[in-house]
Each structure stands twice: as C-alpha cells, then as structure tokens.
Image 1 (tube, rainbow, N blue to C red):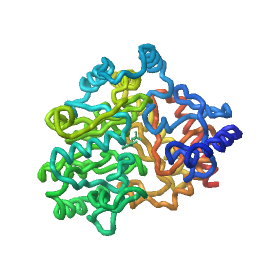
Image 2: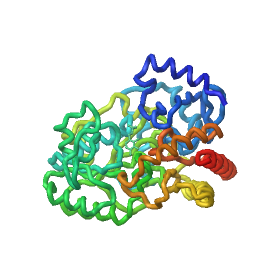
Image 3: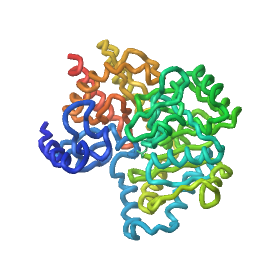
Image 4: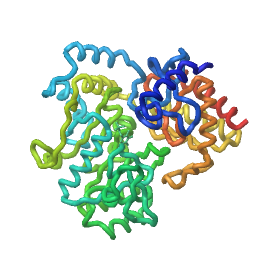
Length: 430
Ligand SMILES: *Cc1c(COP(=O)(O)O)cnc(C)c1O
C-alpha cells in the first residue's frame, strides 16, 4: 500500500488550511501519519487518492447510514439540483422532509432546520434560555454538542462546580454559565440542582454519548434526570445529532421511551448534506422567531438540495425492519471481534448500541463516564488504526471516536471485515 498521493495532497493542503484540514480530528494527530484523501465512496467502501479501497466504518462521522452514494439518494439529489440549488424562500422540499419525520417520530411537534448540528445545539440552548428566563446550563463531561461557546467547557474541580473554558476564545464569563457534571452520577446531579436549581435553564445530554467513546448510560440515570428536571421546571435537551435516526427513527428518546423537552438532530437527517435541526412541542417552538422572541435564522437553512438528500435517506430508514437488520448485523461484527480479543486475552472490549460501536482498549466492560477511560490505552488504538488501514479497513483517526455500520455493509462483508480487524489486532499486540 502506498499513500504517496494523499501525503502529497496533504502537503499542499497545509499551505491553505490550519493543520491542512477544515475540521481538526481529520488531521490524524492522535494516531500519527497523515490523513487519507478520499476520492469517492460507493456503498460500504471508500477509495483514497492512491486508488486503494477501504471498508469504511467512519461513515462521514455518522451521516451515511445507507452507505455512500446510495443510488436512490443520488437520483433525488440530481433531480433537485436540476431545479436550482437555493432560493431563500420556502420550498416543497422542506415540507416533504418534515412530513416524513412527523409521520414516524412522535417525540417532537415542530422542527426548525439549520445547516449543522452545532447551529442546532446553539439554537436549542438559546430557546431553552429564552423560554425559561434562566441563564445557566448543565452539560456532562464526555458529551459533545458542537463547537458552541457555552458548551466548549470542561469541568472545574469538585463534583458540582461552574465550568472553565476548554478552548481559547471562549470568555470565562460564558464558561461560568455552564455546569459540567460526570455522566451516570446521580449524586453529582442532585448536588448541582441543590446549588443552582432556580438558575438552570436546561440540562443538555447526548442520551447515547458517542463523542468520547461510547459511554452508554443506565436508563435509570436518564429517567432520573428527566424526573428531576421536570420537578424543577428545567428543560431537558437530548442532543441526538448522532443517535437520532441511527438507533431507531425516534433516536434514543424512542429507544429508552423518555420524552425530552427539546431535541437536536444532525448528521443522518441531511443524508450526507449539511443539515441540522432542533424540535420540541408546538408550545415551546412557538417561542422561536417569527412567532416568538427567540431569534434564529439561516440563509441556507432548509436548502432544497440538502432537504432532498435527508428525505431520500430517511425514506429508506423508515422502511419496516430497517433498524432491526442493521442492529443484528452490527451485533454479529461486534461479537466476532470480542470473541477473538477474549480468546487471545487482548485488552479490548467492543461495545455497541444499535449500529454505533466503540472499540474500547480496556478490559473494563462498563465504561459509563469519561473519567473511566484510560488515556494510556490510546496508544493501542493508534497502532491498531495503522494496522487496520494496512488491511483496507477505515476507522475515524482517534480512539475516542465510535464506528458506524451502514445498511450497505452486507453480512458477508462484515465477516470479512471482522477477519481483517482481528488480523489487525494480532499485529497490534504482536
Ligand atoms: C456532530 C455532533 C454535533 C455537531 O454537529 P456539526 O454538524 O458537526 O456541527 C453536535 N452534537 C453531537 C452529539 C454530535 O455528534
């Protein structure tokens, strides 16, 4: 295998973009080496600039639930493009996507489309603050909600303290409006409510935290924060940018049967085009402009080409049995790798929820909070990542990232992928 062309393109990109990339984790910093430049994708495969084919488990970080370049999605996108790409007016494409969503998703009654998950989270937080007249928010260590100022915050010292900024350029005054708590910890949550309850507008959580490993929460913890937020008139925000339309059409809210007040979507909802969304009950969403006082807008929001990609994708996802099949296939892959790792005594446990999986290089089976992750284990992942690439299997270039199985990954291909992954593990621990 040669990556000469990718390396050359990366050299060129370094002259244009900070770190050669337009989003930081793409730069391969945590696994070493230089990023692959991808020329095309088809079904479960991507091809790099040197013409090599990889089985893709990154799925553009989640959106490509049907695999790449799905013929029905492509066909609809081309039809949309032929009509023109943007008008800055309402279009039928927005209605069509919203109608499909509401037909199969009872978690929300009104939706507003944005162009990214970050915008959706930012707008949802503003909505919660506007609707409650309170300023503080609670987020959890290990949950990511996009690069929103008030959410780029890490925990202070102690169980329930005001946060400190985790990025240069975020004023401490913003960070102080955010309380960062450990996941899956009722005691810390109760303490924070005791200290700040009348000031808290919203509790934001990824109900299936999938941006810092896959930190599966006890359902009991989620129902607990649902009950407590209700009791104190605090809004509960489910950030389902990854889990929405991924673990089921109604996301984690449907899976766990928990009704949040506000929900964010992204990734799959745009079918590979830039779309995010936030939604809630009609009452809450009536706080948003032009009906209500909470301002929110976007030149390209509801873009007809992007709406069409989302609609064509979700139409496939809404078919009977779609998610069951995806979940069964993923379980088979995960089991094949776990069995191999167990047999050889490797420090690896693959966890999954539906078609989201995470290779935790640790013997611990139940990692539920960010602090439980052994950062030393990431050197195993770096070696594994390189070995998997050599064997034609592509994972996101960080051990904190999850993988995704798409509908285009057949059982036969997943069996082959498991074999290659197991070979890569043997090389990692040789
Ligand atoms: C990806 C992601 C975001 C940010 O979405 P962008 O489209 O990258 O802005 C927000 N929240 C979660 C849970 C995500 O996974």
